[in-house]
Amino acid sequence: MKYAITLSSFGHSNEELFITLTRLQKQGYDAVELLGDPVSPNINTVRDTLDSFDLDVTGISGMWGTRMRDGAKFQTNLVSNNPAFAKSCIEYTEYCLKMCNLFDGKHVNICLTSDDQRLSMYEMTHGVESPYEKERIIENKILPVLTILTRIAKDNGVRLLLEPLNRYCSQICNTAREAGDIAEKINHDSFGILLDTYHMNIEEPSFEGAIESTKKWFKHAHFADSNRKMPGYGHIEFNSIVEAIKKIGYNEYICFEPNLSSDNFKESTKQGLDYIKKMENSI
Ligand SMILES: [Mn+2]
Image 1 (tube, helix red, strand yellow):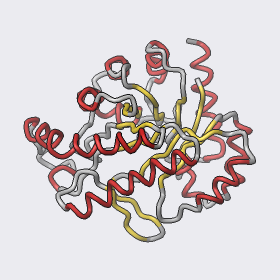
Image 2: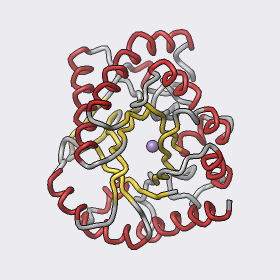
Image 3: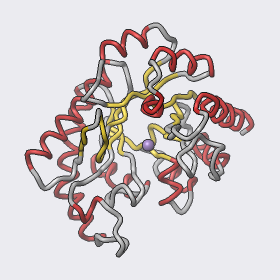
Image 4: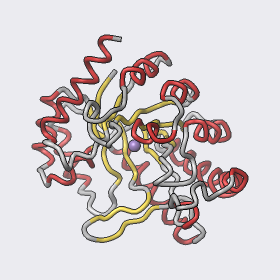
């Protein structure tokens, strides 16, 4: 297995990229995952800096849903009732796919967030949309968009990976099973699934079952603990997850995607990495 971490996790630190990468390489990371940030990309600077390190780029994490960038709201929702906005979200994804190609990355994740209030939020009534209505949205709105984006991914020599999110982020595609159903319908080598332990911990009946059921499409993993910290800092039992991933024959990257803002982040990125590496070696 190889190990990576999302650079967006260090956004809070205002640390220079060179300093972050120097430490990550020393700590034993093999790669980093870049944020698909169209607001302050500095792509050439990032490329030049990365060139002086022995670190690969796994791929690009898209900025899905609503984020604050440079004090302004940045929104990307692939499921939108506003045609002009929906078009701009497809263009944004294309930007990420091209960026991925430029950095020799393998994939771009996509999450199915929506600006439709009924679909975007987990409301007091719980489970707002009926399964039938969700199916209708997937057939009419999502599959056509994913088909276009998969073609663009193929043209750029990279893969589009659908990442299920927990219910507090989106009402559509919360589980490995739902992602698997979509993947079967797209049925393309340039399309796959990314599973994230933080979201799985909320939505899946079993980590092992989720991983096993998506083995045909499983192309990447995000690791964070139950509280979004580095593994070992919350209460997820990672042993069974690492075992299940190895069992399906996956030996690519495990990419940590922690929120490091409340930790001694320099230490925790090392401790979490060592914790999982040790686990992997003992299985
Ligand atoms: Mn993730």
